[in-house]
Amino acid sequence: MKIKFILTIMLTAFILQGCDDQLEIDQQDNITAENLYDTRDGALAGLTGAYSRVVQVYRKAVINAHYPTDWTDEGLYNRKGMQDISKNNFTASDPTLTEIWAQYYEGVAATNALLVGLADSPLDDDIKQGFIAEGRFLRAFLYFDIEKAFGGVEGIPMPLEETNKQLLPRTPGIEVYKQIIKDLEYAEQYLPTAAAATPGRANKSAARALLARAYLYMASKPFNEAGAYQKSSEWSKKILDDPYHQLNPSYEDVFNQLAMGNYETKETLFQIGFSYADLDNNQASKLGSSFGMKIDDESCGGKGYATAYVTINLVLKYRSDPSDDRGWWNASPYFMKRNNDCELSTINSQFMYPVSKWRRFLEPNNTNTSWGPHHWPVIRLGGVMLMYAEAQNKLSPGSTEALNAVNAVRERANATPITTVTDEAIQEERLLELAFEGQRKFDLVRWGLLEQKVTQTKALMKTLENDPNFINDDWTSLGEPNLGPDGIPESGDEPTNRNIRVNVMNPSFEFYDGYNDFDPSKHYILPIPEQELGVNTNLKQNKGW
Image (tube, rainbow, N blue to C red; front, top):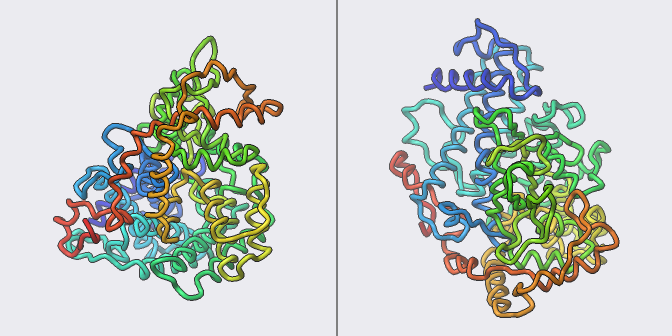
């Protein structure tokens, strides 16, 4: 099994050597499974294979990342065959869950194969330590995702021997986090700084950010680990004190850079990189096609199917502060149509507001119907600032440090500053800043608010169902705004056009009836796929499933 898996990594790595110029490998005929880790190039091939597995986890799984998290009070997914999870109407035999589980554990196995191979490598310690640090970072990242989505991780560390596969129990949550901390502390020690790191690869700041996030989860429900808020604050502060890291002055440009496939680590500390050139090697992304602004014609920079929608709950939160650019970027009332030229146009009554954070027309030279190079942000500086604010506010309620961190994020988005900081204000700010970035459900779970927010969102939609102010009958009276190239109304048109659209949106209420299927006894985490229970007799199904 071990030799077979290493050969798979080698093959994947060599296929990918032309895809990403940031991970260049000199292919050598004398590299074999037995001596893969005897040379730097061989070890780099193994590392590239591990990175490629992580890319494949997030390939459709930018979809996978959304499945377990964003479909709560901020949005819903409405694509045939895939909407059941979004609407809490699925079982443990759902094939998508089986695929998600398998992809994550293939990624874990790849990182463990790398670490096992490096353990006995004759390479110099400084080279080995760097590669091991990247491997442990990737493993911690995957463990973190699995624990949040499924609760517990199967076999820590994961053995490579196939004969042991049926005997692996799941490690309980708090022990998973302790292993995540160990891996990330090692990674933080030996990884290069963000300024010095190769774009697309792990760096010291990314490890610090994941440490801050891990401690924040440990401090929250159900673990309530003593001292964890302090640790989260300390790791976040290390990043905030690093002069290299600065907020991009433009919120929308953060996502322009991701759409163009650029690595901009001053704000986006770590991202999953995709490449349109690597479509055949499973290295391209559906971000922007399945999730993103509606684009009628693929000649307008690739087709956008707009299968993910924003809840009226979130739309109204954004519209409550018309100066906040995040609302007009993340929940835009426009789509791209094909007339004499590709142009943004006001959305008509048959559509709900799509998640417009991801915009395919910004992708360079892409006309593929479904796939593109759109990168996925794992952790951004705005998120780090809000983690710091959350931890500081727990340690010292109403502190100036927490208030300043929140207002720095709001100032960048041109949002009105807040004058008092509370837990509730920070929680709402995370929703506004990080919408559709794979954080929301997990945040609500650790705050103990998931059931409450889902219930409130459904009640709001039912209240507005027959309100004539929210039924769109006449768009002709609106006129077209002067839109900038990023889809945000130009100055001068902002007050009129921004305010009027609060009263004409059509939220298609019947679509949200899926909230009836939310069951607080089981929907906090996903079930273990039924197929896996038959393979591994030591696994026990999650409560309620």
